[in-house]
Image 1 (spheres, rainbow, N blue to C red):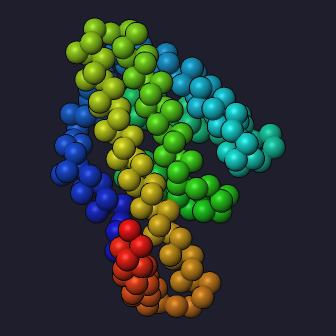
Image 2: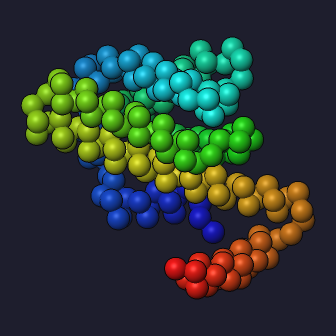
Length: 190
């Protein structure tokens, strides 16, 4: 079973996420933090411009969500990434399940932030520094994506387990057996 620490450890070993990745923002922290409002505005303008994602937030909730995203961005730039930060990312998956947020929406929106951050880096800094900063941001936010997606899957299965009374091992076994059957059907049709 995946848990937060396992996901972070796996991502870190494969992708080189380390304390140095977080520290890279210190040198240009003031500039990076000055982008917060623009990044948050871009994120929510995009979210509300697509009908399937525009209906996810409750009426009047935008300001609260903007504050949450602002705080999240500040935590990343300030390097405030501790166990509590990762735990929050894990439970974002639970909020997404409850609201019917598809992981493809969440991944797409993270890409919006990554792209906008990269644009700002290349507009502000020399190419080498811009690349270094944008790659660090991508590495951190990709780690966050991993935690959110795994949290989503883990908590989705846990919700089914709690509601149905079927033990996780049985759910996992059922999924394994059926996916093997489905994969054979897929291979037979290509």
